[in-house]
Image 1: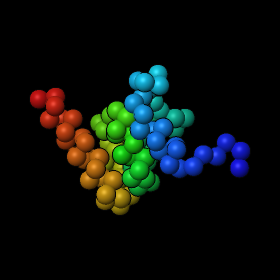
Image 2: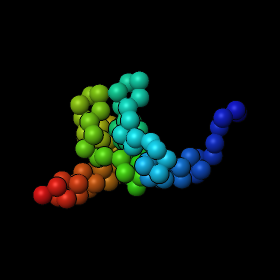
Image 3: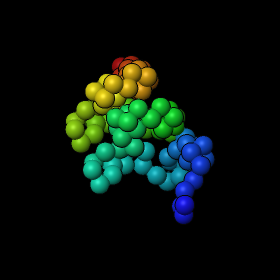
Image 4: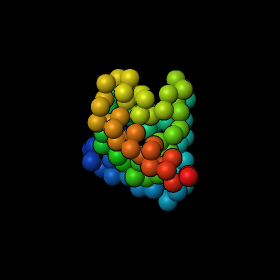
Amino acid sequence: MVGWKPASRSVRRLKQPCRERGADCDAEDDYNETVLVSAASRGRIAVVRARLAAGADPSQRGESTHLPHEEAEHYGHVEAAQLLRAAFDAKAERRR
């Protein structure tokens, strides 16, 4: 398959801090969703971890206006929801 990359290599690239690559961690796709929101709604734990490690914002809302942890909860992805909620709470605590 042309353009296909092994998952481990793709996830490693997602972990690289966005600023190092000159990218926006919270850029939205054509559906106004970030990678983090999309991964949350699908329960993709490895991608969620990688994006958080790269600096993605757990308080960035998607098109549905839900936070990433709310998207994960809505679709029944408990582990992703817990991880995202912890990141969201940690960010809120740092703002205080």
